[in-house]
Each structure stands twice: as C-alpha cells, then as structure tokens.
Image (cartoon, rainbow, N blue to C red; front, top):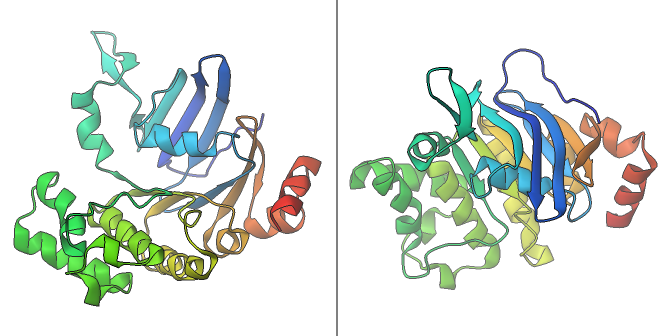
Length: 263
C-alpha cells in the first residue's frame, strides 16, 4: 500500500491506522499525511473507509490500531506515565484539540427551534466563550460569506436544503477550525441545489488557508478545489495524485471503473 507523504510540516498524519467494526476492517494500516493548507479529496466506492477517516478526526470513532497525529502531536492518543507511553486519549485531552476541527455532515443537523443566527452563534458562545456581540458579529460575517445575510432571523424549517447546508457551513467556520472536514455535503440535496453549496465551498477554499479533507462524488468540484485526490478501495489508498492526473489518466483499472460508474 502506498505511504502518502508531504514535503515539510504535516497538519495531519495517520500512522498505520486500522479501524475495525467487529470482524470488518474498514481502514487497513493507513499511512497518510496532509500538509497545512492542503485540500485533499477522498474518492472511492461506498464502504471504502473515506468517511471513517473524517469520523476519526472528529473523534466520533476511536482507532483500533495505530495513531492519528495533528500538528505533530498525538491526537487519538496521549502520553502517559514516566516513559511517555501512548495510551488512548481521554476526554480531557481531546476537548481542546477537538476545537481545531470542524465538520459539515451529509445531514444538516441544525437546531430547528433556533434561528439561523442562533445556530451559528451557539458553539462559539458556549464552547469558545465568546460574548454575545462578538459571536453575533462573527456569525453575520459568515452568513454574508455563504449568501444568507438576509436569513439570520429565519428558522431552518423555512429554508431550502441548500440554504440549510450553507448555514451548516457557516456554523462550522464560526469555530475558526484549522481543519475542515466535508462529508458528502451535497448528497442530501436536490440536484438543482447542489451548485449553490459547491459554489460556497469554492469561495471558502479560494479565500482561506484552512486545511480541508473532503469526501465527495462531485468530480467537477473535486477537480476545482483539490490539491490532491486519493482513491480508496477496501480501506486502503489505491492511488493518489493531482486532480487532473487521477481523473484524466488514472493508473489503476479499479479507479477507471469507479470513475465510469459515477459519470
């Protein structure tokens, strides 16, 4: 299996990470590095382990074997004892580190009883400790970025799916994450709403230096925003490269087969 490396410092490092659910191995000894500010898109068939990578970085799942590092320090594990032996991280260790990571899910997961503005300010106020005015100013800036400045008083049930997903993007960005994870963010949308969400994410990619890991079947979007694509199959990286190379001239027949299936 290829060992994915990057020149210079690493934002994320998966060091021989395996994840199993019972007898099923979802990630199989994964070695993967992502550079600061790099935009990496994970492609491949359903069940190949792509979303599991994002869930491990969000600490929604724990690794079975191996270690995840962020900014050169253990993330999935923590040093313990006089020898600094690594043991699975506890909540006290994870809490401040988890704040570096934001995620936008397939489902919007907005609070239906709160306004758009309140949805975006909730976490900065209660997790980061921002006062109400500072949180609201940050939220309004981000709602302007995602094209929803006029919807701050609306409730999610009054918004289209595309608008709800744009609120979810603003909510993730309100935490000022260093690492943004995007999990099939258009899969729950009607086709005519996909473009508006992808346009917002293109603007985020173009206007910030945030590190992004994206799982998507939208190959035009992957081509536009990615520095590197990784093709996954059965929990391993089958091949990787710049979008033009991997999409236009893949080396492996399995990659060619997958790309034909989604076009």
